[in-house]
Image 1: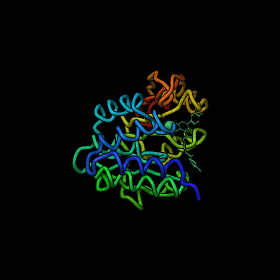
Image 2 (image 1 turned 180 degrees about the vertical axis):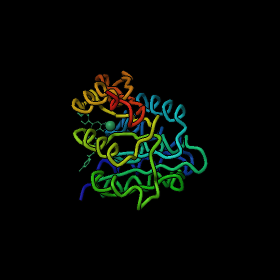
Image 3 (image 1 turned 120 degrees about the horizontal axis):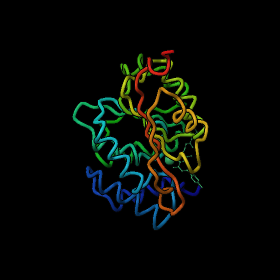
Image 4 (image 1 turned 90 degrees about the horizontal axis):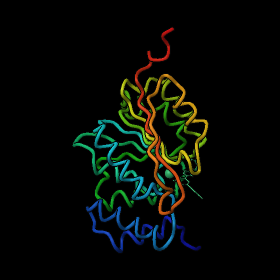
Length: 221
Ligand SMILES: O=C(NCCNC(=O)c1cc(-c2ccc(F)cc2)cc(O)c1O)c1cc(O)ncn1
Ligand SMILES: [Mg+2]
């Protein structure tokens, strides 16, 4: 049967990127998506914003919701300090299979745990399965109408601590209106919008960065 777009992207990476060189894998994917076939990676423009937030937070524990082909997974993992961990959840097994090979080609597999399944099912298993107490940074890039329920779930499970940062992709396109309304109105978050463009296009999109000031905030009378 005809190959999938992620499979063609992986073939492009293997042909044009150097093993063990994350930047060359990132550049190869950006080239493929800009000049051959568009794909829904966070991309180079929003990727620069993602990089700056990762460097600012310098997280010990990161959760990524929505791996897709592993592009943002690599952007985050290449900036992590030794011993820091990135857990990335992907619902689609075919995409997960491609992402594993992309991450391995970049030589970042030892920093990343890719878990297949639904975020709603896996988030409650974080402690027992991965020994994670809380996350310093969460990158939301999966189904847009799951951003809010998964954020509520992480709050209720105590997986966010004072200062935890949520960074959400696509808050304009395709859009996550209920999530935006929540993080911007809740006294529980200090939220800021980073205006950018939908990956590889001139369409407006952006990232919303929301800092969790602590469970007690917003509950005082
Ligand atoms: O498909 C699953 N996740 C991808 C989410 N990501 C997106 O949908 C996404 C879409 C776009 C996009 C923007 C404009 C356009 F015209 C078409 C697509 C851009 C992005 O940057 C994304 O991140 C998925 C499946 C599943 O069964 N369960 C959980 N997640
Ligand atoms: Mg996205």
